[in-house]
Length: 97
Image 1 (cartoon, one colour):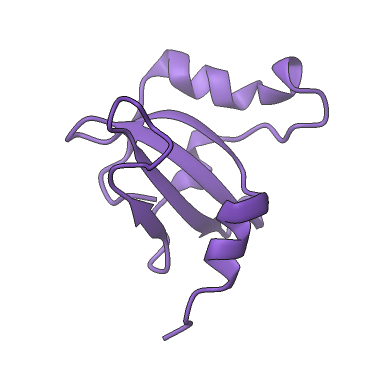
Image 2 (tube, rainbow, N blue to C red):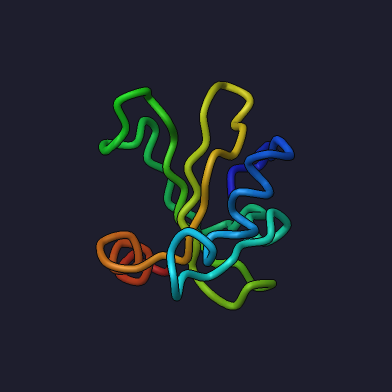
């Protein structure tokens, strides 16, 4: 969802198997995290203690809004999930212009 987002193999596997850790969770394919022109970027993420970036954007491949956490200037993806709650409200409530 950030233009230069990339995934380490272990982090890609982590999001591909979310439902193993969180029953009912949606597994995420890294390819689904491609940049959304309407994405919301919180840099830094206000919930992060390490200065990570939070990106919220729609994935046409997945068919839903996803939240991605990335670190570093190179935007390495760390985790991702199907957005809900405040993240989803923020994305859906933004001005469409």
